[in-house]
Image 1: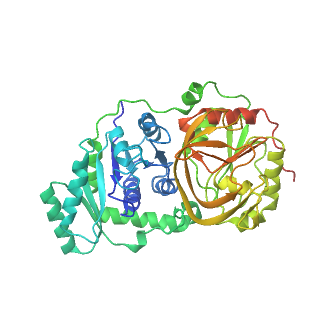
Image 2: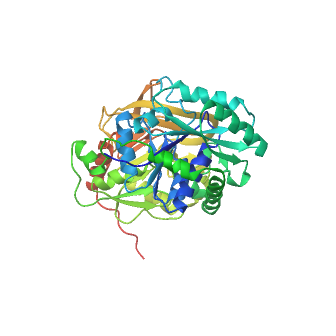
Image 3: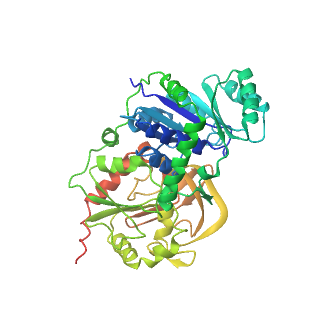
Length: 463
């Protein structure tokens, strides 16, 4: 049984300020001396970066579609181990989930799975008494969701706040905070959402501090903490990466093969559990920055290039010719190379006309069309990441196009929502737009580690 105090920060819709409020709460409680565990509902990679900055701990995702509802509580308990408080930021509107799947992957479902009280962040900028009808509707829609309070955002004046509080008092929903409009707490956005922390470290630190100050001034932290402590015990057992690898059918490999993992500002999309699973599988994870490092880490036996924004850094990535040659040499040796989305673009011949690694016979370019959504897929052949027939649930999120989108040996056969083939498998390379959460299928990490262990180490650079 676990008694971790916890809150879910939700909203009626996207764009109401829940990320600002959730991150501000995390930072404010951390500054008050609490150890805070940060979680994000859904597949988002960017918000957890701000959560990590606010708390000093990894930001973690809770996605009932990617990992299954049964994994939500175990992953939460794993991530919140040793914390005094857990704050879970929701996704989209409170009741919005995977399209066509009812409540699956919604903030409401995660809140129910965690038996956590929900605080609704409401954009009050264009309403007064109507806020009570809005909140009443959200509070009464699903009796299984405990909507325990409201934080009013973008309040215009003291008089405006008085009207809002009076209306919500009639509705019987406590107001736990009222925040004025504050431009200094806003985080800049672009084509795929917020700009990641890694691209604006100094400014992000200032922004998170401003968010913490705004929350301290406008929210009742004592009442919010008491509400978090009102959450009942959770009966489940924490997820454990070592046990997950063992249950996948084989134990850890020997020899601690080195798996290089791309990081830095261009490749910021990664779930914390991936590195934990690789380590549990017996690998040594070595992070490098393709924008700065001219060689892969010494002893590299496999390579993982996750998601991010290579389109923003295409010129810099292209200019790092020594690293591109190193990647080409590793791929040519047959070593396992696993690339997701941004990694797929980096392995292509070109991105918006800039030369990339040229491992794949394909070219990439920016597009006006957003490709977004959950997917179901099956591995069409044995490859570095998955055995043929392995079924996964994943997520696509990009504004780029790769031509051709699938090689002669595709990475995945998409089965839902539309049937198509996607990605490239050649020699030891597995490259695809599909983001997959390995906690749902730990055999992926074990297979990659085993493939790395079977390869000779990359020679250390001389001089």
